[in-house]
Amino acid sequence: MVAAMGLWRRVKMPRPNCTLQRLRLLMPCVCIFALVVPIVFFNYRTITYFLRPIWDTPPKPFQIIPHYYAEGMPMSQLCKIHGWTQRETPRRVFDAVIFSNEVDILEIRMRELMPFVTKFLIMESNATFTGHRKPLFFKENQSRYEFAQSKLQHFFLPSRPHNPNEDPFINEHHQRQAMERSLVLAGMKDGDLLITADVDEIPSAHTIRLLQNCDGYPAIMHLQLRNYIYSFEFLVDHSSWRSSVQIFNKDIQYKHVRKTDHLLADAGWHCSFCFRHIRDFVFKMQAYSHADRVRYSSFLIPERIQGIICRGSDIFDMLPEEFTFKELIGKMGAIARSFSGVFLPQNLLENAESFKFLLPGNCIREAT
Ligand SMILES: *[C@@H]1O[C@H](CO)[C@@H](O)[C@H](O)[C@H]1NC(C)=O
Ligand SMILES: *[C@@H]1O[C@H](CO)[C@@H](O)[C@H](O)[C@H]1NC(C)=O
Image (cartoon, rainbow, N blue to C red; front, top):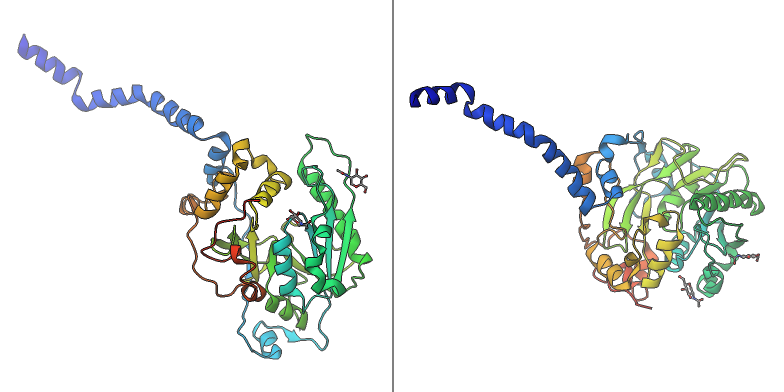
């Protein structure tokens, strides 16, 4: 009998099968657990971002135009090495930005580009993209930009009626269209070079000098910028691409989207959230087109923001936008600190005392 039972057991329920069966029963539980835990501990958006490599397709890769530069090289040789030819008279250059509250970065931008720019066009509205009333920070701080007075044209754009549930991109679009109309008012003519960028996307001086003095490059090129966050201490990657340069014609569009496959390599800096005061971070977080990223009011607490600036972590607690798991996982967590202050805007280093907060090792911000 005992022997028979043993046999029965051996025949009926061999061990491996038993484990398999249990696993099969457990499987749904494991799946539910695997789904519920992230939903409880993270949130819908985090999961969506984490799964981006599955649901999203990466944009078409750019055709990157190699970019060469060394100090002191003659322009003829610089044009030639790019396969371009040197112009007899330099192109006129117009730098057009929509300004919100980036007073320090704007000063660095204007000092960097000052020698090569014909006109700085600065559009400012009395409402943010999210429709909140906004002081005219540029006007109020105008004395800081006196050095560029002769080249400056400031446009005031009155706010449009705003519905509280409206997508902030509608206001952004409205401001971009107004800028488009201002280009001709500012005297732009066929053949002039237009820089289309956010205030914090700064082409390097030598890049603009090159484009102003050479012929033969595509009529529209995006600029690849070194991507920093909070200051030049945190280099995120080299993949900022939204800014562009375009040769002016009457159909030109002032848009901040992909316009062409051409991307000029290593053409400057993009310093996001590079503010002097914690209050400027709070303002920007609520003002810009991605203000819906402020999911909890606790995100705006100054101590939290200060901690994040010093750690180099994400101010909205979000995962990076990446299209492969390898890159996504590689970029999760805080950004590595950089100790390099080589190849930064020259006027930033010349005025290092007053722009200290932008340099490595100075993450503490002014509280008020
Ligand atoms: C902006 O300015 C215009 C005219 O100067 C005014 O009519 C409008 O109410 C202002 N908008 C806000 C949000 O204060
Ligand atoms: C200058 O602009 C900043 C915004 O970045 C603002 O907080 C400050 O009040 C302005 N300064 C003056 C003197 O208006």
